[in-house]
Length: 63
Ligand SMILES: [Zn+2]
Image (cartoon, rainbow, N blue to C red; front, side):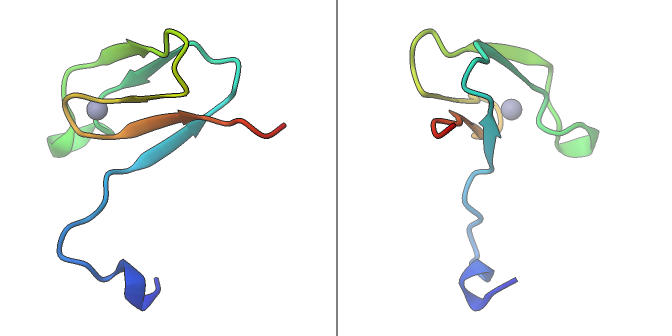
């Protein structure tokens, strides 16, 4: 933890996935903060955002 991390509003979690992944699954991490499982397709984009929990899935670009 650094002083920069101490903010009232936490930024959305970013999850990096492999460059060849086309679909990601999100359930909010499970537990009380979770949500129904949803699948998102990158569909050519380099990142997708979960409409439930604002998590962002980003494709790893550098090899
Ligand atoms: Zn989610």
